[in-house]
Length: 236
Image (cartoon, rainbow, N blue to C red; front, top):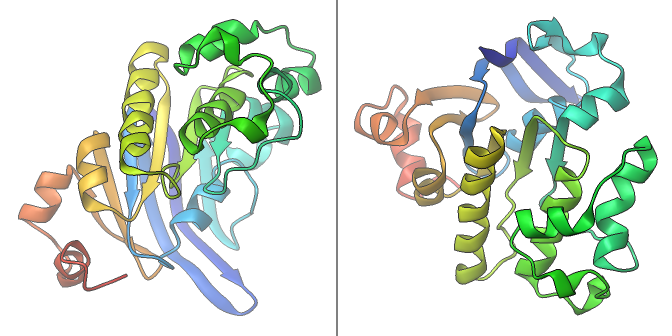
């Protein structure tokens, strides 16, 4: 089943084309990596998938229904997002975990969420300002999971982490995808990270999807000459 289907998606901001005729289908389950150099439109594409932005051309379908037909808050309960910048709300870890469920009137057990993301039970009452970068990112992921999404959008979730924490978050995302049956869409500009994390990949360059498939297959048989330039670090 295709959880998302994008047909000839265009996005223009302030007269600048960000996305150009993007055709993408993303299957339910597993981890799809959205890969490409900085400024290629990866974050912009991700934001369209829970309607933080709206396309200026084309159509997006979620579970075979026009995404615009969904109530926006109901959509965001099903399609959660983890942003690149680590932004926690003031207060404790528990305050953050309960924020979304409180908005939607949903019961949730914070301890279960902490266990799910690999945080110790004694983290409940910790002020978020005392957390390490890796711990903070686990709380942010836990906050997104607390409303029970079916899809998790992750915008370069390890961009500001040290190598050890990066590997922990990668393993956590893979664990969550398997355990919860989550469909994860993971944005990265790092080819090796995409290889470690993704079940499938799309390569986005200059606002267009130029490759799709497995990372190994894409690199072995690229369709666009810019793909190997990107993989070699020549496009940033």
